[in-house]
Image (cartoon, rainbow, N blue to C red; front, side, top):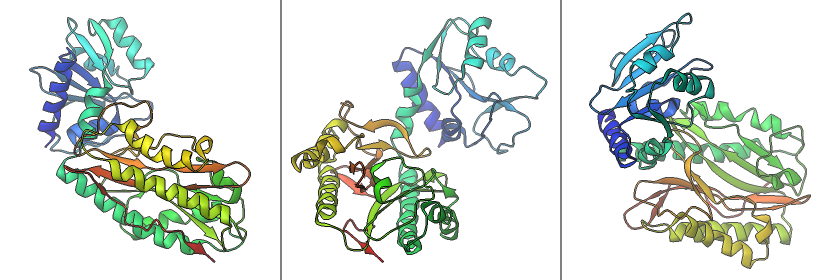
Length: 358
């Protein structure tokens, strides 16, 4: 599996006119070798080269699998990690670099003349990761099923007077009870007017009757990420709240209906945005429609008005339209989908219908 992934990256490199690369993104290294290391401030890099054995350069304090799908070069805290890294590069050829190569390592490599040039080439790995294998799709399905089950339990935590922070603090326990490794990102729990802030951080706001209750949550299971948003109402919603909710629901479902191989990301965004604009709320849908997801909760390749590439079979991304009315409330409904041969598969089964809590 890992050899095939590396071969795909090397083919992508060749199309860029490159024959070697330094991969420093920990999740990309995991994708290509099976080893996951969070290096902190220390150097971590996988050197790929045409006709050469892929080699991971890492600090010996970290543990990696014994059957790693590459060679290794280690260093300790008293040694310069860029010596083995530079030795593995061909100084006569340009080096592809990924977005995680920090300046504190890149500039010394440039000064050493480790390569004839340095080219940002994250896309050669990002493109490989964007096309999920059958095994990866199963892992994404499992994580999303757990997220669905968790959402059913999260809403039971909602009661008058509870704070956002109190609810958010209980979510990880639920995930772990359901078999997940924990959060895939810091959860968003928003009550009332806070739901009009798409990335609100849970605070001491207390739940009151009439509030919108927004959960944007995800777990990590089998190393793959889930991500889903549902908006509830605590007590009977107003007519305006119902109208906004129904508009967002229709926008989500309209976008899902157009997903198919060859359809552009921007056209999927447009399908959702048109529904919201026609309802008169266009200025209040303030972000892109979605993002790709896998080993990282946000992976390159967004579902936005400026991304004109077509979607392809095996791509997995979120569809998450929202309407945010400052000082009033907000609604977002988010699902993950995988592109299939003739459309898309929604990974979330939790209902879209408006739910009243309390």
